[in-house]
Structures are given as structure tokens and as C-alpha cells.
Image 1 (cartoon, rainbow over the protein chains, first blue to last red):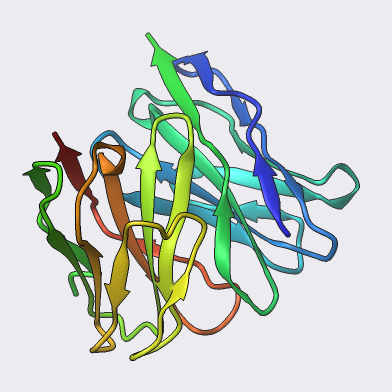
Image 2: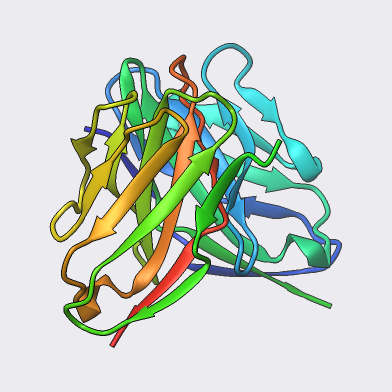
Length: 113
Length: 113
């Protein structure tokens, strides 16, 4: 069965600084990987996804993520954080032929002035 | 194109009362899901459906029932609400093709007193 670990519960970043949110997954075959963002009081919005091909994927709002099979990781990055990026971020893993996603427990991003 | 909508947005119930949450999607998606979100626990799958007339149990199905009588609607029922069911409930839907990326509704905040 798949599982996802987001080791950081909270992260604080200064506005304009770079950001990296960690995600580690457990799955025997090539997974489908997703990052979602949840603004306060809102539903989840898909930022980006990986399911094959180039291991560096670009998403919306200037985010990118890199799939590293050797490290079982799919870390989310952004070169310069804006105050509007403050939100909770969820990593999720899916699998071929398996209609469900497994979500991590989330990382709350705080952006300081 | 409204995407995924949920009704109601907020609800307060007394222990033992019943209620139904409605999820509707206008994207012609085959798959639909109900999750609950609790602090520090991420999203946990309650029930899901892979097509009209089908339902299946997720990770935390106890105390909930679902029905998918029409392709565009997925109902979540609580027959006898308990305080442990105080949570934020999210509905999601996805295409039947891989990688099964899910689109989320705005959520329903339920409080059981």
C-alpha cells in the first residue's frame, strides 16, 4: 500500500526567500504524485502532478517539484515566496489502476514580512 | 462550469441527529470521493464511488453511508451524529483515466454538540 510522509508540520519563510517543502512516499512501483494547496477556509487546489516523463514538473503559481526515485521524494520548490503563498500544502500519491489517492498530513507555510 | 459544489457550507447538529451532505459535479467525472479533514491528520477517505450506482468503503467509513444515484451527485449521510464526527468534509471527483487527479469542493464544516 502507498503512504506519504510530510516531515514538516510548519515552515516559516521570509517573503522573497526560496521555499522547499518535503514529501517522501512509499510505493513499490512508479507512483503518481501530486501537490495540492489549501488556502484558509477553502478546498484543495491542484498545484502540479507527476505521472511519467520529465522528473522536474512545473505547476501553477510558479511552483515546481522534482521526482527523485532513488530518494522516494517529490519535494515542492519555489524560488521566491510571496505573502499570498501562505497556506497548507498537501502531497499525495496514487498508483496505476488504483483509483484512490493517499494524502500526507500537510505542511503549513507561514510567510513573514 | 461550477466544478465541484457542496451543500451546505456549515451545519451544527446535536448528538443523535441525522443529516445528508450533497456533492455535485458538472465535469462528467466517473469517480467521486468523500473525505474528512481533521487537524494534524490530513485528509482521510470515508467512501468513494467509481460510477453511478456504485460505492465502496475508504479508510474511515464507520458511522457514514453514501449513495450515488446519479452520476453527477454523491451524497454522504450521517444516521446518528456523534461528537467524533465534528470535522470538515470535502468532496472530490476525478476522471476515470489515470493518473486520477482529483478536483475538490469547498468543504462543509460540521459541528456535532
